[in-house]
Image 1: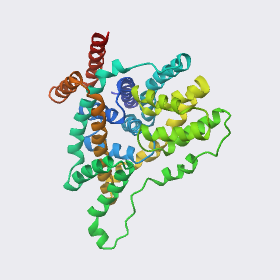
Image 2: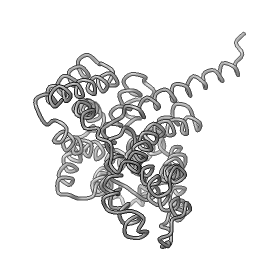
Image 3: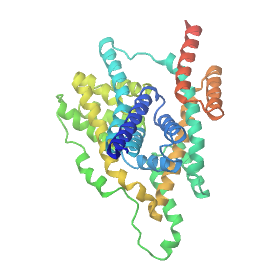
Image 4: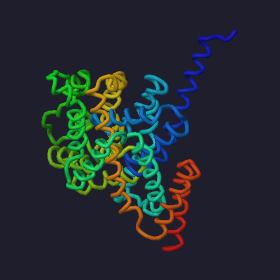
Length: 396
């Protein structure tokens, strides 16, 4: 007779091992920013491992977009929670962050000791076009799941237009989602019902005062000030690395006076050309101002709100589909999120596909992904080798 508790424990351990293996791998090879991270996660958990359906993945992505913090990291945390419970939440997020933190820490050490950021252009020359192909494949699959009605197709197009006009990504994400709610529930509105407006669970709102900006601090460095400054940023920031740049400059250059503009730009650059979350920029800044203790404290502080928000919001995600109001809102948010991915991918493509070699790499990677279902990990590694070799041969 099978020992049921032992079998359950073994299943649990297997799930945790799968979560740990997957997100450690992604933390090491997920170059290209949030859009690329989301694409890689979709390939792994929807297409290859079948942990979740396309719709469930979209709903988790929509929930990630509706809370502050790094979207792709929060999606990793959600997926770990889905597969292996609360411990899976911690393992997925922690191992997705850890490789990037260690790499950025090494770059910060080199920056302090040698006065410059290490050059990674030769390596990334071949990686970037492959990442574009990975994202395009993901967008194709997500579009089919997200655009279930003509209205949602219009949301994607309007998101692209609003993004092109330079509006904050929150405008299409929230504004168009609310518009979908109003249009799809117009008959209920006509009957003068009083629906509950879509909003984050009250538990999330209760955390906001805790995440409020800290009082103006003296210019003297302290670990406590560093911690609460990054805690505020992690708990309140929406948007891309460019938005992060604005937050960092306001706090560390203008308010505290700990860093220069050039140091902030260098920190964001390192966060963007290393794998994993762009928010590991905090690791770099923490090291600049406080050495190894500062790097650890800054990293913990900037990512801590994401773990808390996901733990609070996760139980509510399935319920979003039970109400016509929140279901419509989530549909709108999913379509807008895909539209933002398209816009970001276009921008990435303009800077990643720069000559015939990168164009061939992108096209070849797309064919291998879509037609032959090749694992994106091998394509990323292959792109790095090909790009580095080509640069070595071309420039010596």
